[in-house]
Length: 485
Ligand SMILES: Cc1ncc(COP(=O)(O)O)c(C=O)c1O
Image 1 (cartoon, helix red, strand yellow):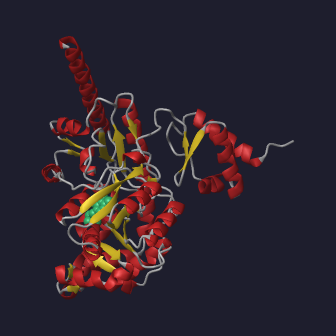
Image 2 (cartoon, protein in one colour):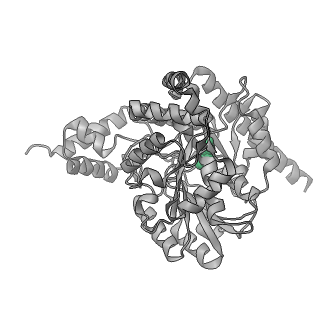
Image 3 (cartoon, protein in one colour):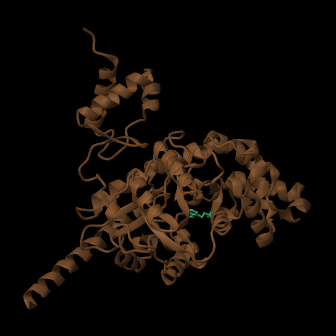
């Protein structure tokens, strides 16, 4: 009897795993890619993956795909649901200012701020489009670009949003100055000072600081590093506290890269509708999926217009353009009024240049290229952590974006590592800035959108060495305490 096709496919991939083509913790090709590589049907490819899982070669991760099994690479850093802490305020401004002052220092190794290396951005193309606008359209671009922003740009964005199943007309969209302004206006549209806002935990520090500046209280909802926010915990928080709004990232949260499954997104939108609570969706990393098309947005499940969808081109084209947008759903008019009379709108030239760049085509190709590069880079950085950091270090396995969340072993501290690293002009983001609590003191976030090099490997080795130093010091301290005791 001939070997079934799925068995043949599984055997080939298993052989590749044994030969080290796919290493521990690495993602094997998606079902879609297996179909194409082996010219087999979706059912055969899925069956082959099932066999590989049954035989212990790979482990499935919801919404992410299949990963080569590895004890060391198994991250288990989710805060238990029972540990949800009461509402709090964020109070880390001095540290944040210090961190931002390091960002942009050219003689530092920048593994901190979530800004990709210039090599990953389409700067050449942009230069041409900016020059074109400056040459042929300067009188328009120096004029006010009133809210809601450049129509061609809005039109291009709404077409792109359809790829994510968001049916939105360009007149329902407002161009903002980055996703940060989109979030700030969304919060001010649906909340006022003193209100309580639910966020994921850990959470993007820029949002925590923004909430603090607006005088809002924060309740952190326990979030799994793979599957995103815990629905039972969110429900518990809504029942227990007077939550006024919820801010969640749908795809590849900052700092962990968590991605809520499509089913969970649907459930969360339904839950918030039952409580009549608006959801501010932050999808700034959404275009950087390592497996495009696999994950949807909250907004695509929204029927009552309660989702205010925010995003930007900062991570894909360039943060300095300061172009983001919001589709505020039923809050459009309040949002637009607030926008209109806060800034009148944004600068015209970058909007026109970006509209021209998107119109020309090539953006999708650029996204495919960088997403692939980021997926590879993450694997290299994960390998470096595994190689150079002490045993007991775990890390996230994001299926999109370029951020790696590293949990140091017991006895080490993320803030201390940040301070030690500064002495060597290396920047990393310390865990405490991503929370109002102390739950993430052992964590750091690493920006992997860097060109890998021998020098970078040495930097990772140095970071590992600093963690080893911390552990040695902790043991010595413990010994001297015991001796004194
Ligand atoms: C999750 C998240 N949301 C929003 C922003 C702000 O983005 P922008 O630079 O487009 O204002 C950032 C920036 O790093 C981010 O990481």
